[in-house]
Image (cartoon, rainbow, N blue to C red; front, side, top):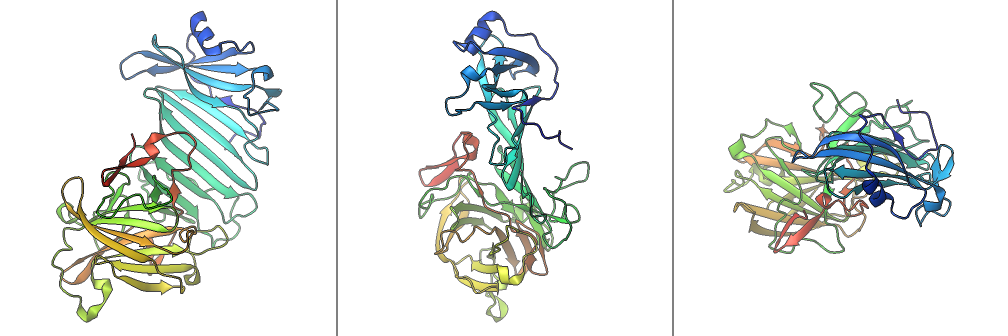
Length: 431
């Protein structure tokens, strides 16, 4: 349970105290800001090189409020100039690691912060919003200063069936989320609990009334496709494999390592998916009996068309299944009579020299994927389907949950770990 509602800037959860900064460090932090006061100093363990670390909490008066906040920042005793956190790393100059000014964080004015300091870690919890409420918990390392992970929750405070919790691992760029079963009545307001504890592995249904999925990740969105014809995705997005990595094996058994297919998906905005496939079993597949594309190695893309901000257990009228084989042929699956994407195909070699097939599926509607999307790969052997790996759970040929595309390009924290760039003909991590 969270703390009672408080219109204050930041509540610091107690951590080990440390020695206050010396006068020279305080002067370097405060500069000419007369209202600058050292509130507390927290022990942050040691850096990777063994230097002692501490984090200094600085409180500012209204006279030193941020320039973009005319009325100042909300505090427990009215308004002030906000709070800052500075890192003391051995004998190095003080470095600002966080600046906060609670302006309500949304029209409802429910903004709140908590900050915790742990060995080489800074953990920041924040909540805000309007009718749509949100919370985020961001965990960062101090040395080097970078965001490691983020757990967020988004829900409508007047719609019990909404509520999605998302975890981002910025090292791997793997994004997972859980959402409520929208068919259940009398749900509580808010998000489902994130699976925790021994044996609580991430799964298509981590607990009763909630569904889990891997979000498609867009770390390099621009107005045009990021990868040119002949290019590859590189390490820009995590790979799902038919061995069960970063996906769920929803039919058959996980592939042996030597036979595992690897699938990478790079969304470009909300109308294009670039999909890269390496499948050791795909070569020399016999023609399927009866000519069915289902027995060929192929992709299945599920697209949601809901209008109620719910993404789980959608009825067939709000779903579209699209099949694409490795030759680039497009097939209509089950669901509504939506417009199928156009597909461009090319072959290339990935960063390890393996042959890969690239399939670029583009819809005419620039917001075609706004209602959620999932990707399934069917691996075939001896002319028959042997296993399916999916970014979401599939039951009775229906997706349990179609998560939204996770777009990193709109982030305001400058986290380069959430970015990709084009290097030659290959997308690579920006850092």
